[in-house]
Structures are given as structure tokens and as C-alpha cells.
Image 1 (cartoon, rainbow, N blue to C red):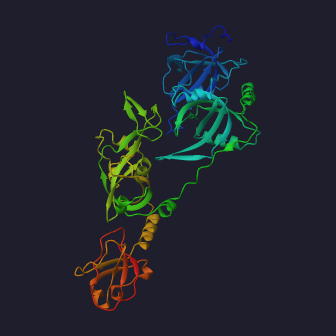
Image 2 (cartoon, helix red, strand yellow; image 1 turned 135 degrees about the horizontal axis):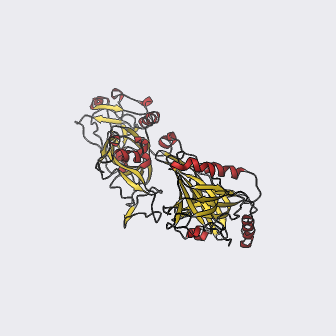
Length: 523
């Protein structure tokens, strides 16, 4: 291990008990710290510093001093740094295991050391088995090296009003395979590198990644602005790693496999008009089969059934609080990044029947067009069970719903049907109505003076109507409309097919000769 130059202190000794520290360090990484919602408005400049002993420490420049230091600090160069403050190193995802970090102030002096080299890359590589042992959570960022065996096409993730771009990479080392999830602007970088000509599988070094838990699997992901990907670096570390894989019988002279692309998104027109059975609201309760069905209805009431929001993990599951800490049962981890999401129950009617539907975050956002976080901010100071006007304004809306029908009790929704998608497009709604009208069966209404002639043990009944008895029919509606007939033209017997064992009709007992039978459906 190299010794620290005379007149300077080793990073390993830095603590909060001294104010006159002098460091000679190599800037390993520099990045802007920004909120996800405002990526172009950084609130701090963060850096990773390495001394001659190979010890790392984080440095932070607050927003007031960013312009000054961002112009003078260049990644990869060596600097003398003095007159800085030392503070505790905290936070959920730390870049080093040092107990402290340095804080640049207006008095901090930074001098570039020309012709001085600290050769170390400052990498602390983890193996696949070490990552898997974290169970999806670690307080520290990590470095990883592996060969790229597979890559997915770009995936668009929609959460409320936000869209996230994602590419998944399968990385392999001698201990196994781990999945890297790449989000945001780095997607373009990865896709560009994958498209370049190459021979065999490339070696990737991922610097400053964080452990995640994605779809039940432990993996790693990039951190906005911080993560750096080294693609087939021409350094001894990467060359030796690739050569060592042959010992473990891992092939590298093959092409990168493309992970089966996800199907193209289904259009709203196809989703609500073609792909799923159409039902009336009342029919949902009578269905024996499970699956997704399309209904249309007006929102008659917003049901005040507890809070209209919940705190969720990144997997969108509600967190539970144990010992004061939010915990996700799905991801099996403590959750530090909580997101408020909608959970709203409504009563919907199609004019003939009504049902309770439970809408979650994406569906609620589609109807309200404001995020749950925004409404919570507006509702500060109000009782948690008081629903904002933006939610109450849903009453009266005509909506197409794709609902899920299940017969088990695993998702205890209190006799509510889960909404999987919604549509308020007027053209699609009108087309849906026309399609449903075309399928509406013949309706007959008879004067009450006539008796019932129905065999309840059969699926159809014969009703004989003579020309003299047609005055007993008060309404005839036959569809499609091209086959419509009027009550004055009904001079023949009809065979009426009962629908789902519904109540029978009143039939005529008139005189006259029998006519031909006609098959129709009775509603």
C-alpha cells in the first residue's frame, strides 16, 4: 500500500475532531444530486475522492457553491484540498463506508496537482453471491464487473403521471448471474453501445450501482447521474476477468442474446371494443367464469371507505409499519422511498343495476389527471378521510371500465370489483354503445291480462299469438334494427328463448290458426 505524501493526511484518519485537514486526492467520480421530479435542477454536487492509500471518502458541495467548484474540479485529476468541514456520512445509499464525508465551503481551497498520478481506479467489486445475500437492500452503493449475456428492448413504465424508460441487462460472473436495471437517460447510452459491432460478449464494469428488488428478484440498478458504466474497458482488470471465465466454462465468444421483447401496448380501442367480453353491470355478480370484462356506467357515488390514499413501496404494494419502520411484505425489505398512491371506491350504475368498483393509482390518475402526491399537498391540514373536490368531481362521469372478476378471497375487496383499466374517450364509448345495442335481444311487453305459458324445466317456451291477440303486445323491439317488426305485424307464433332462467313472459291465449315459429331471445 502506498504511503500518503508528506504534509497530507490519510483519508482513513479524517474525522470531526480536527478542522485543519489537508488531503491529496484523486477525483474518482463527480455527479449532480437532483430530485427525480426536477432532474435539471441539482441541489448539490457530489464526488468520490481517493487517496494514495486507496481509501475513499465522499465530498459534497452545496448549491450555493456549486458554480464555483463544478468549474474547477475535473474527474480523474488529482487535487490538494484544504479548509473544508467534516460531517457525518449518512443517508440511505452511501458511496463509501467511511463514517464521515467532507463538505466544501466558501473558504475551501482546491489546487490541481499537475503531473501527479494516483493509478488506482477506486473500485471495490462485489460478486453475484454477495449481491444476492443482501436480499434486495443495502445501505451502500457498490461496484460490479460481469459479461453482458442478454439485453432487453426498451420498456416504458407508467406510474401515475410519470413515465420511466427501462432496459434490463443480464450480467454474468464466475459466481452466477445478476440483472441490471438501467433507467432514465442512461438507456440511450446502453442501447447505443449494444448496437455497436463487436466480437463476443462485452465486459461491463458498473460503478456506483444500488441493490434493488425487481419482480421478486434481487438485482442492481443505476443511480441517477452517479452510476458509471465501463464498456469493454481496455484495462488489465477487465482482460484478466474475461480470460478467467474460461476456467469456469463460461462462453464469451457468442452474441448478446436479446431478451424476448414485451408485446406492443394494446390500443384503447382494441382493449375496450375487441379483446374482452362486454357485460352489463348486473351480470358481473352472476358470472361463473373468472377474467376481465368490459362494462359501461356512470359514477353515481364516491364511497367514503377509509382513506383515499396509501403509502406504497416502489413495487406499488402498500407498506406496513412495524417498530416504526415502513416494511414491504412483497419485497421483504424496509422501504425508505415511499410514494403516496390512490385507492378510491366508487359506485357505478348502467341504469339497470349498480356495483362497487375499486380503482387504484393508475386508473384514478387517468380520471383525475392529478397525481396523488399533488392532491395530498393541497389537502394538508384537512382530515385524512375528507375527500378532495377533485375526487368528488368524478360523480357523473360516464366511463368504460375493464374489471376483474375473481371467485377467491385472496384480494379481499369487500364485494368490490377491481378496476384494471378505464376509458373516457367519447368515440370509443359511442362505438361501444352502438355495438352493445346491436346485440340487444328482442324485448316483448304483454298486457297483464294474459297468463304465463312457460315450462320452467326447458330453455325455451312456445307462445302462440293469433292475429286477434296482437293487441295484447304493448311493445316489440327486435334487433338488429334491419329485422325490426311492429306489434301490428305480429300474427304468428313465437318461440322465445329464455335468458339465464329469467322470469317468463305473459302469453296470449287467443284464438286463431297457428302460424310459423320464430326464434328470438327474451330479456
